[in-house]
Length: 461
Image (cartoon, rainbow, N blue to C red; front, side, top):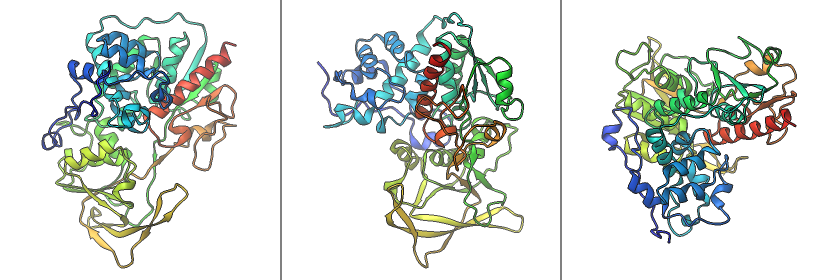
C-alpha cells in the first residue's frame, strides 16, 4: 500500500548564510530512511506517465519500487540500463518540468521526489558497490565522439556497452563539458562527475583531451584514421553579448568565462593561479540557470551585493524554481523588469556602474512570452564593479567551418535530419547543444542516446 502523504520528503540543505560562503554541495541528499519513505509514495502506475517525459526513458516506477523494497543495488541496475550519468541527472535535471511534472501524485499534492531518489541510488551505489564495471567484448567497430560533455559521454557509454571501440575527443584538459566547466561545485561536485567518467573508462571508452577538432584534427581526418561513424556533441560554448557601449571594459565577463575560471580552473581555492576579479558589487544580466549559477558563485567569491538583472518579471524567469529559491535565500537581489543599456567605466578602464532602464510587459512575442518594452524616462544607474553577461550561447564555428558538406542553420547549429541525429554528412551524427543551442543536460543526454542507437543500427545491419 502506497504512502498517501501529499508532500514529498524535504531535501536537507546547508543553511543559506553558511553555504553562501563556501562551495560545498548545497543539497545534502536523502538518508536511507528518507529514500525508502519517499519511494513508498509512488503508486507504481501501469501506464508510467513519468517515463514518457524522461528524455532517456528510465523505467522510473521499477527503480523506485526497488528502493521501497530496500533493494538499492537492484534500483541502480534499473537506472544503469538507461543512463550512464545517474548521479548527475539526479542533481541537475529539471525534473519538475519532465518526469515529476507528469507524476500522478502531483495532481492532488506534490509529485514523488524522482530526482532525489535517483541521486540517492547513484550515491548509494558509488559508496557501497565493490565490483568494477565489466568491459564488454569488442565488436570490432570504431566510433569517434567529439566532445566529452553530457551528449558525447552518453553516446560513448551506450556504444561501449554494445562492444564498440569508442574514442572521445575533448578540447579542454578535463572531460565533462558543461558538467566540469559550467555547473558549480555546490550544485554538482566534480568528484561525482569524475566517478561517472571513470565508469565509462572501465567500459572501454578512451578519452583524448587537449584535442580541438577543427584544429588538431578534422572530421575527415578522423575517418581516415579508421573511425566508421562519428557523433558531434561539441556543445554551445560561444558566448553572446548585448553589443552595448562599455562591454570591452575590465570587469565585464561572459558567464562562460566566469564560471570556467571558477569551476574548471578552481579560482575559488586558496592560492589559485587563475586570475579573477574579486568584485564587491556584481550585476548578472540574464535569468536562466547559468545566470543563477554565476550570481551564486559571485556571492561565494566575496561580493557584498549581487544583482540579477532581468528584463521580464519573476514569473517569466526561465531558471528552475529551486535555483531561484536558493539564490533568494542566499541573498541574491533580483532586479526584474529592468535591462542594461550601457556599461560605465572609470578613468582606469574598469567597470564602475551600469546604466539601466525599467521595462514593462507588452504583447506576446514569437516565443509566447510577453515582450519587454522600455518604460519612458526610467533610466537609472546601478553601481557595480563587475558585470557578467548570461544571455545565451551558440556553437563554436570551428567544426562547421572545417567540415565540408555539414549543414548548419543561421544560428550556427548543426542541422539533423531526424531524431536519430543524422546530419547532412553520411555516418556523421550530432546532438545536444551543438544542434539545439543551449538547453538542458538531460536533453543532451537523450540526443546522445538516440544517436548511439542509430549508429549501432547503421554499422551492424
